[in-house]
Amino acid sequence: MAFVTDDKLDLLFDPKLIPDSVRKLVGSDLHIRPLALSDYERGHLKVMQVLTSTPDPGKEAYQEAFRRMQTSKPASYFILCIIDKSKDQLLAIGSVFLEYKFIRNLGICGHIEDIAVDAAAQGKGLGKKLILALTELSESLGSYKVILDCSEENKGEPGRVGSIQDFEVLTASLPSPLTAGFYEKCGYKYKGAQMAKYK
Ligand code: ACO
Image (cartoon, rainbow, N blue to C red; front, side):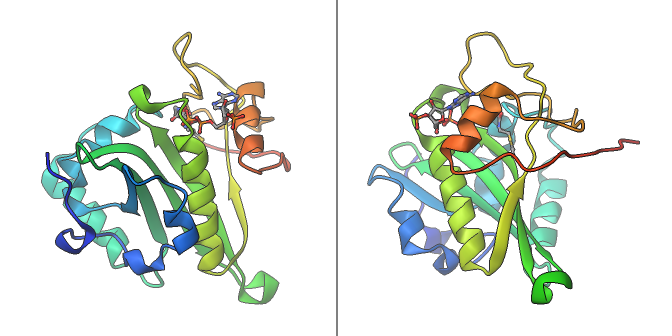
């Protein structure tokens, strides 16, 4: 499939919000951009399967969810994709959600969520670039801190790099040595425990 430029895509947010420093993180064979409405057809949900169960809700429901995020006020949903330009293929996808607070002088907190690197593209530095990109984007949009949850559990397939599976099981957690390895290399530090209650 031929690479589609940003101006021809219906994007989740204005690509001008992506700082130049973030664009420079990826080489000339790759491109970083906001999630596009047409990424449903580029296998967005298939890439997310490396993280957790991501059933296909159907194109219409996908598009509704996209529009809900795209029109949220204040803008809170920022999903970045790293694309292989030669195939117009999604290689890595991750999001940062902006939470608007009263504390910290009406501070903004960025929550990194749902990081997935296509199985065939793992171990080549894309995950780290994605985390750095989301962190920098969040900071450029005003966040005073960026946080993320990663699981103590490591239930990935044997032999796969970075298999930090089953994020449904968000227990009060210490990071697994594997996750900690990855996130520490992205500049993150362990800070407290997380609690969760699932219905
Ligand atoms: N354990 C220890 N170190 C690791 C691991 C790991 N599991 N994975 C990567 N690293 C190291 C690499 O060796 C590399 O080190 P270096 O900079 O010294 O060379 C560095 O971390 C960066 O690695 P990348 O190649 O960028 O990692 P990758 O592109 O494979 O992405 C990721 C890592 C995101 C975990 C990927 O493997 C993946 O998608 N896994 C399945 C889904 C998942 O677990 N997502 C994270 C969920 S957490 C969340 O969503 C907030």
